[in-house]
Each structure stands twice: as structure tokens, then as C-alpha cells.
Length: 69
Image (cartoon, rainbow, N blue to C red; front, side, top):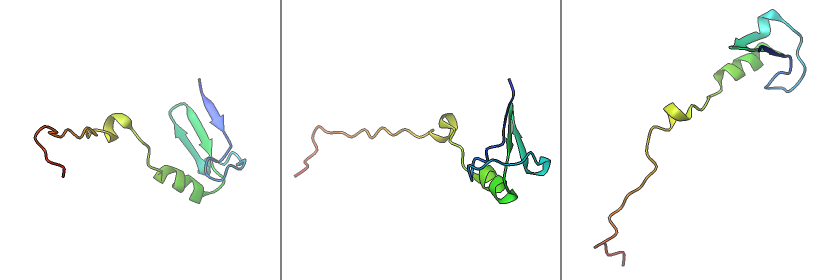
């Protein structure tokens, strides 16, 4: 399946099918209203939980024998 969208993901406005303002990402073609919007889209950080969350959020503490007063 291949998807083409002319809705600029930054401005949320309909963009013309300009090959210079076009980005192909796998099976997705995205057209942008301006080169600034295309650059902003490319510069967005994408979360990749498998790679980005490699630190444990567990905070083990030894509660026995600790004087909290």
C-alpha cells in the first residue's frame, strides 16, 4: 500500500504536488507548502522507545534500617 498526502503536517494546509517540496518515507509521500516546513518536519525528533528508553526508571531503595526522621 502506498499513501500520498498533500496536507502539510506543519501548517495543516493543502500543498500543491511540487516535486521539490516532496518527501518519501517508506510507503508515504508527503508534500509540503514550503521548504521551511519540510525542514521543520525533517528536524523533528522521533521517539523510538526501543532505543530512546534504554534506562531503567526503577528506583530501588533499601527501606529496611533507614531512619527517615
